[in-house]
Image (cartoon, rainbow, N blue to C red; front, side, top):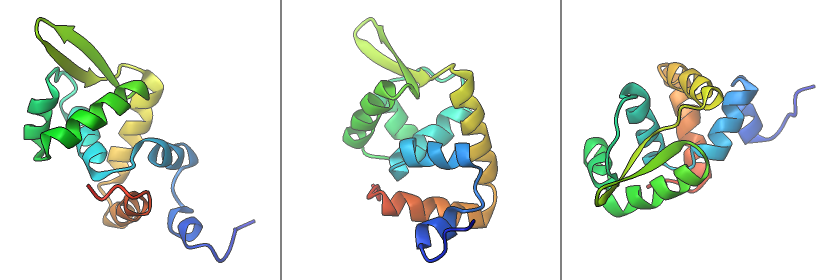
Length: 126
């Protein structure tokens, strides 16, 4: 039965449940979304937070904070190389499958509007 009367439910009701859970858990800011999209489209990228910030056009400090949390959540892998820490997208097949569904769905303008709504609602307008 449809849960009527709640805007968040109405806006997200037609999103596949696994993707919706992924969004709620992991896509809480535009910086995270930009990082996930970039790394999805460039899966062999292994780079520093500073360079990742440059690639996605975000502030270094914000990206540095996000990659730490994203690593703790299992979205990214961290590798200490020489004097620098580099990050890469996880190889976890479950996460990659959900990310693929999310990126694919984001090709649709209506879905992107729903995603933006959720990010703003999560307080992640950075």
